[in-house]
Amino acid sequence: MIKSAICRLLPFALLLIAGCTPNPLIHDGSEAAIDRSTRKTQADGHALRTSDIDFSRIFEEDPAPRETGFIIEPVTPVHSMRHPSFRVRKRPIRVMLRRDLREIAVSSGGTVQIRAAGANMTFNGRANFEAGAGSGAVIVSANNARREMRLPCTLFVSGGGRGRAGQITIGENTYRGALIFASEGGNNFSIINLIAVEDYIRGVVPLEIGNLREPDIEALKVQAIAARTYAYKRMAANERRLFDVVATVADQVYGGANAEGEVPDRAILLTQDLIMVYDNQIVGAFYHSTCGGKTANIEDVWGGGPFPYLRSIDDVDASGKAFCAGSNTFAWTETWSDSQLAGILRRYSSEGNLQPPFSGSLRGMEVRERFECGRVKTLAITSSGNREHTTGGDRTRFLIRRPTRAQPILRSSNIGDITFAGGQVTITGNGHGHGIGMCQVGAIARARAGHNFDQILQAYYSGVAIRTVIDDR
Image (cartoon, rainbow, N blue to C red; front, side, top):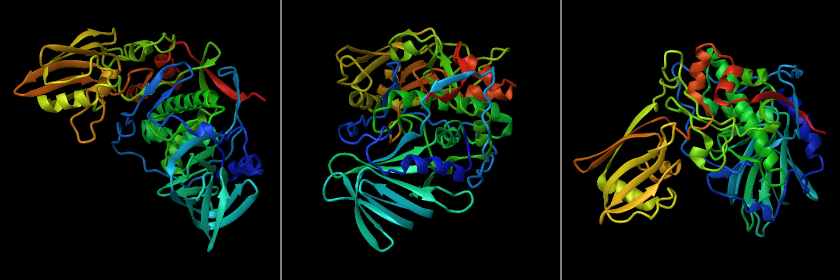
């Protein structure tokens, strides 16, 4: 539940009173060698690849100003028959913020306590952390003192003034909860934010769907429930790992206290502790920016078995108009020179699972097969010497990179026309993202059409139950 930052500090103080000795939430050593890619594997076995997603700028007309300094008073959870209880282990979530660091500075308006095995210290204002000469230690410089601390160590704050109590700043980002400095092996270290789930969601929702206004609050509620569901599923899967989620699109974009907004916070409060469950299991709450009018079956995108709650749907209103038609990526066009696209195909053959890898010059490209949702099932590419190369599914997006300097992945595998003319290749398509689960722009349009959050969730996640998490202890 969302509480004032002062109220939030008390459970963290109790949790961390023994310092940073090994505990069920922190595991040092070999488990630090964690997958560093922008992919993750859900407990259901599907790999999620979302490194292209930018949901925060879809609806930006006249946005409400951000307010980050207010305090929301504690509320008492209401467990109703409408959303019956579901038992989970309720604990703080561990969010990986920074990795492979040699040096970092942190600051706070309050008094920061540092707890480590066999040593404690406090500082006010700013402190600098640098990797120690040996592995498993950092050197802290603060208050005209310099001291080595063993890893892991925990930082938490008391005081700091109204709206900033218990917050710590790293660079331009401010975080609630506590910070864990943990060993990365060798001399490097990482920083993990240990924070209550409801406060974590406050830093996710506005970045994932936008800092929307009051008329869109039902869409914000939907995003809050999806993000919370996702968080609890990852926490269950990663119970014995160093962290639960990362703060980027590899999981959910998390911006700490800076990202919070008044209306998103209200939506989180109104959906406090609600998650989605299917067959007594927390669901894989996948979501994406823009479906292009039709969502996808999970097995069509990533392979593996089907899931009954992640089915393709026609995401259209009563007149047949796509709910996400207002998105600036509902329809898109990309153009490359022949040689530019050939270079991209050579470079990304492995990531795009192109068989055999591309070589030579580009001669042709066509969609041979489509899934029922319209997305590519088989893409055939012809190179010089009339050699054929094939790929399909969501890997298509990772093969055909957009013609910009950063070469981001293609917005969608829902490819329309492919034309070769005048030494150029032009591809048209619809949608943005993998297409599984909730279409975020569609959810906003549904909210504006008067749908409540229950109706929107049931539209995108077939047959799920909305339940209230309670502590399984």
